[in-house]
Image (cartoon, rainbow over all chains, first blue to last red; front, side, top):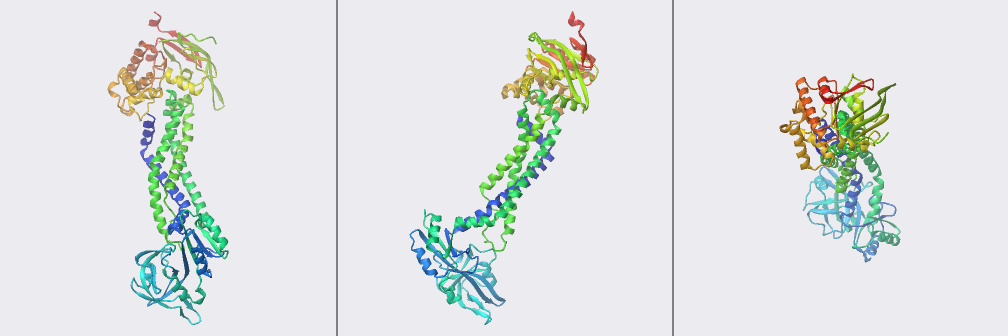
Length: 395
Length: 237
């Protein structure tokens, strides 16, 4: 009976109810997006960092990986030391640099990563194979497009540019053997990878025993934080960053995003709440005579409150799935725009859908739906019956 | 107040009801005392503003007196808490209003079921009782109609069936023929007579002389006081 009355009341003013549902849906969509935004980048970074299974990263003292052009010297002994540890499963040394590839349209510059193919964690092979010989190279689509080459072609590439000689230095002829997708590079960023030894040789004597970064994969059940402390103690000349530490640093950098998301999410929730409260207040005012009669014939105050709260919650319940769908579509669209954000890895999602985000948004909306009915229902249930009936009769 | 007499279904003593209307203190009831016996049919008449509807509201436990006492069926009801008053109205009072006040979203049967559901009667028993009541008021075939599909007289019959749902000790009607044409009004008067003949205690507030004439007792009010209280000739005989 209660549900029938609540449903009938919503259906009686169909257009108004539909508009309210749409309004709340927009607010719900926005709320979901903001919840996704507040946790999405963090989670996205986390899964990115863990994607290749490396838990520790060693960078030059006081820097973050590839934050500067600084390098770690005596790298080979460092790598050997790490590989000798029983807790370490794999060490991937990486030397960063640039490749300058002359083409008929000019010189194309791409980020270069010197790695050991067998242990690398910087790219995923899309087509072809990883470099096996010193003169082999893999590149991503952006690079291949820019130089107009493909797998099997050879290129002449340089690791540097000598401003005094006004010419390229460290030139090698390299054969493209694979098309790859770089895990940590930004969308549309040109990149190529070649054997570590080759890049070192191209960069010259200075780089012969240097790396920019070492990534360490630990054996299962190894405490990454304890290992981070241990490696930091053994190798005081490097900064050791665990995934947890990296996420913490990312968190710090993203705190503005999160604050923005929380504020906008709260605004969305408040707008939805006020919308439903307004609708329910108007609805109660229209039915004040009906409510007074229900009270007069013995319908309990709690029953009136429940009926109005159900109406508010029903609007939220119908609007929420619509809103969540809307939020997902909007998030996908915004992600596609923000994927071109300069300097961010292509794989980072600003709006990452996680079930917890949907549940959080759903919980907040249901709570808000129930609360939005409280004031109007309290008003309706507390009216003076005799006075209301007299006013209704006069009206 | 001495213990209420159990043969009197309504016992009112020194009832005063004042309320504020802006700056003015309105004396709606000025020390009203009267009793209604079980199975009586009482019409309260008087000019507009004389306090008859206020008296009905106090009897119906939807308004509280400023002072004085009201007992219905032997139970003091003038100072009940909201929850107790609601429960009392549900179980012991039946209300019929001038404007019917049916729930527009519900069918005739569902409207009658509303107080039954509130009283906790199960679905099947509720439907059966609602159908029986609609049959009693002559609307057995209109149970699935919504108020908007019923005439004024039919709506008022549904309202009466709703008022009788929980077998109240007292049926209160406020201008029940006020919105009806003469012919429908006459049908309503006949229905009230039948209800009373079947044992229902009725107190009706009305301007309708025909309806008042149908009552066994007519109470005249003026300026918040009872100025005349007489039984019909036939009843006295």
